[in-house]
Length: 115
Length: 112
Image (cartoon, rainbow over all chains, first blue to last red; front, side, top):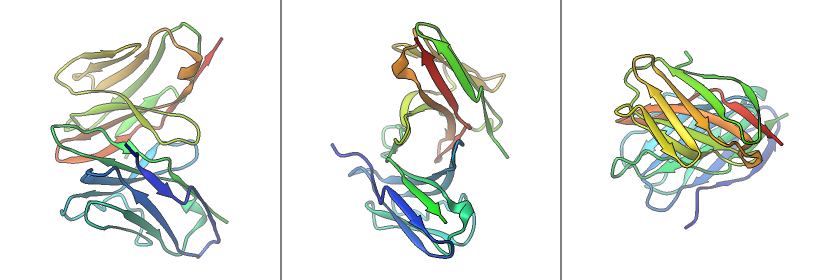
């Protein structure tokens, strides 16, 4: 079946502009995660949605970052007033978390460049 | 606070050799330890994972060794092949909060 998809694949924006990144998880996956990967570094957790529970926002670096999820489907990550340090690849992952499975399936990411 | 430390940062291994990547963690509540493989321009993909109730798990050429008392785990790639050239990330999470804490990654290059 289809994997996790993300759009756009690349985004170049000017400092101070707002951007919106989209994630379509695997159908039926109740959990959805956003991570950030800076060049040459590991992945940093940003936010986690699980079903109808309140999201875990503990990884969001500032109040310029926010995310929403509609039910158990699409999620959008919004970055307001972008800064150059926001340049990174933003990765979305989804998982079922049923049957003790922890496997997270990642999308290809959105490469954000702030000029 | 870096809760998962990974080494080395880069590794070059000859074809047919054994590639070894190490990780150490701090949070004793972690109970799930996956390794992810990432090729350029792609998202990470799960390679193999282990729970702390076993000391070793093997899948094909890939083995995780886990040392609970030392809070360390490692990935061994036997008979390394050029197609294994990628960046490898260790990670950890715990039940009830499945967000992954990642290591900083190891860029593995297999040379002929």
